[in-house]
Image (cartoon, rainbow, N blue to C red; front, top):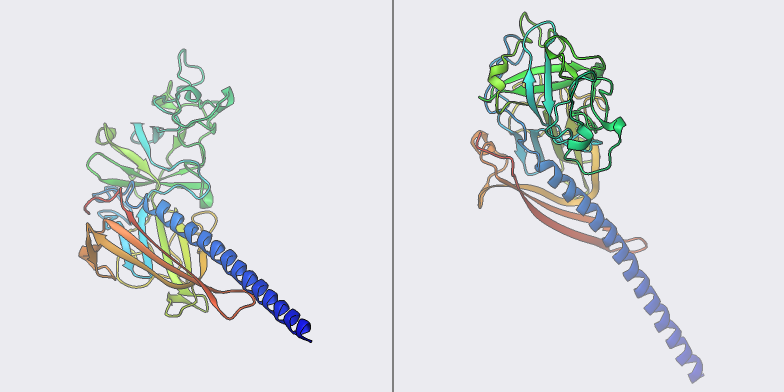
Length: 380
């Protein structure tokens, strides 16, 4: 009888030990998965914030006609709440290999050509000449992007979509209607709205005989006589062309979309728009303010798939989350007012994820906190 009792005790103890070990393994595996999810969120936010303000012009729109005449794109931070962050900058497309800013090597004003010559890290110092030029550089040799390139990768008039063209590697992509929307910025910070219809597959034109330009501006954008005319002199030395993006982060309860999350079962959503800037002071841009901008908002010129990502879920199971804004070491009160939106120099992200451990009544909890300094921020 004593032996049976001892055996039962040992069996019970062994079973309890196995249960403890199994539960501990389940908790450890879940926490590891949650930590990976949290790290992906942090990495995504860090990558986006690295481009906050990049390429954004400091002055106003100088087009002769259109909805944006005299408008400014500032402030860069459009909304800064503890559960909501909206900002602008020139980000890479989600599937791009490189960002979007390019230097203007030459601009031809006026009809009928309306052409420009650009160069960037993809082409290096080489501005691709025409295929029939007596001497030409090879972008496959001058590119600053590491890799091995063949003759088919060289950008010239016969290969206008080659990988080492300045707009190659998905640096610029055609959006809705086949258009790519660009912002020209001159040496004074004035900006001009332009678009190109696809990648020009033709030969050099008019004044650019001997230089392959590759990009032809569409006449009449924005609408108005002479709206496409740009004075090349205003771009000499420091002009550039960018594709301005709008980036949205919103924390919501999945069961109550469109408003800030007030529960402990939240989800973080993201949207990126690269369509036409239009009027940056319009509500749909969005206009700068203190209101929450969530997933029920459809930003202007942001058709999912062609001109934007659409609202995407970054993470679920978030029990606590906050953006905290800093000017140097000083905390700025959220929601950011008009003055503080121009003063943000760092953003801290506090994230807590909570999920029920399978087969148990307990929850696994993972906490993360990181502060990101905004390298592209200057005073608005």
